[in-house]
Image (tube, rainbow, N blue to C red):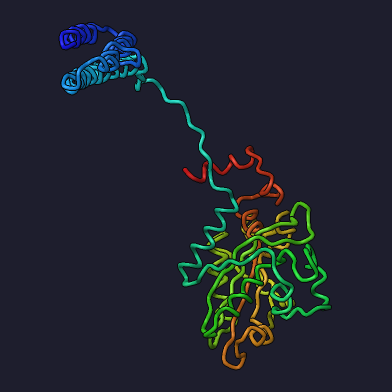
Length: 345
């Protein structure tokens, strides 16, 4: 039995060393170490040996087996390396060839505007606050001095889910939540960007649009603070040389209230189709926070005052990039969006 094992060892070593590819090596492995291999057969024939011979032969078979497995593993590693070298040679890329132009995306114009607005107000010490788009009647209207039956609700009574819940019509609801969540009733300086929903759908209005609203509450806040803030905001977004005009208006949550116009950035106030020959463009609404709003949301109107403002981010994007139809912002038309690639260069 020992001579037989030794002969198997010599023949196996010779076949492993002389193998020229992975197939020949695998055949040798099966021939000697497989389930029906010659070395395995030796183990099965140990039943005919005496008890004294079995451990000797078993140990010898294991030594030969380990030797062959070590040689096979080393040979397999050589073949793997040869195969890798072959693939590298065949798949070599000529880096001197001209490259293929890779199409790259760009930021959506609305995202650009949102980031610009947030960066500006964060640099002025404001916090960016968000809230739910599915809002309650309480926060969307009642806490903003718009009780049930108020005529100013007519233009905003839009997408109700139940009698109590609706898709928010303005991000002012986030301001009310921020005031209520401020348990210490300390000063507030926030902006609230986000989506809003109303029954509109034409070239300049959409049933879904984006707003940003700002709120400042502190002691001794005046119209001068509001005016200075809006001058910085408008000139940063639309141009350094613009003039602001405040027109008295009405909003239930501010008193006094103002519509804010800017001198037309296209014709510089001379009159054109964009400003309808007036020289002015309406951009936002604003005002001093109504005492009722302060009181309903836990602030003492005798101690605190504040200002609020709001504008459509879609409107800013249309002004800044010369977009004539608000629906283009939501169609995901690649031909339209590709125009903004150069803004990243």
